[in-house]
Image (cartoon, rainbow, N blue to C red):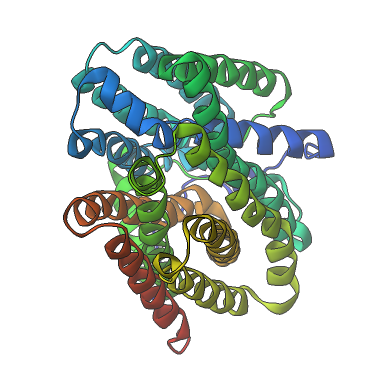
Length: 408
């Protein structure tokens, strides 16, 4: 098997982990900080309707805002997350937190859609600090409980993704959409200060130059079939996930619902139930193997989206309840699959965890960006059922990828 460029640092340095550094309080802090950071790229989704009206932007143009967030996040993971193997992760996390705060303040002050798009791209780039926090937790965790601890931190991430919509929906309706970005800036600042006080330093695991470090991403992708499969399957899952959330507010804003941003955001409460599966999925992956979890998760997601297509046959109240139940279902599936994929990926090459994580999440957020863009077009041309059809198709494709025979 072809060997990936090895770090030029001694093995002792590569394996260095601060003794006793991972306390329960630090795990909670990492989960909270990751949740607050990742929330910044989702706050905008339930308030697209009122934001577009305020900035006098068309639905198609407003739909580019979450796309810019997702693309920025994907580029941040691709270009910046690998630096976690080359430099002290603590310094990288704190620097990105400071940049994210500035980007959020700029978004809140944006006078037009063009500047908001630029700020959204910067928010996505700097919010990639989440993908420095998760490998940090994996590095600090004992091997026998890595899945559980990564699952716990990912609970914070997933709650941040889903509850961000609840918070922004209500805040935007009560105080305006700009207030959401200002409050987010304060929350990221407080999280950064807490990490500055509590997070230990990390020894670099490679001395590769930056361009060589980026090149090694492709070498890792070529070397590990498990990494390729995880990135592809999670990207397909993410496309359907993003398609739903990026068009939900627009769909609820129209007939027959005529509901505002607060209701659209409230769907995040239903989706938050999916976050509860994260530690459980991690434990199952530790005990029964992560491949089984990925197969169950992708199948459950596809089934949940398929049932959603029955909504038009019901009265309006029934349609809303069905959407809530299906939201719980597909979030459970997506989050369980993600935890299992992380467990697979982090075990491939410990000294390259930041880069392995980068490959997995670049695949995921390329899928999210594509899902958001395609879903906006489908919704504008053919309506909500076309978005549901897209989500079912991508979820079934992910299930097919996971059902292929395992290769070395």
